[in-house]
Image (cartoon, rainbow, N blue to C red; front, side, top):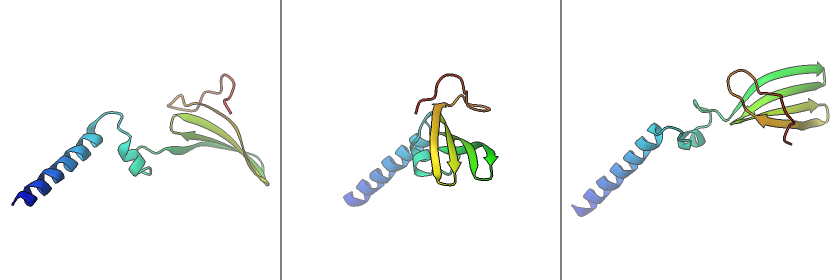
Length: 97
């Protein structure tokens, strides 16, 4: 009977830990386990075609805005900025590469 009690207590502790990690504000545990859920890490904000082979992509990665240039030979990181939330990223200031 002692084994069953220990297993029941262990299951209760795991259930309590799962419950608390889902309810605590700012908990990132479930976003890491399930990145495609509500707390997505990456989102395409905007795309601008310059020519048929040259495109600029503005992507939000967690709390950063990333500007990437795509061309026929690959892609290049142009800069990153803190994500300002809401609409688009703030382009003020110099990019941090």
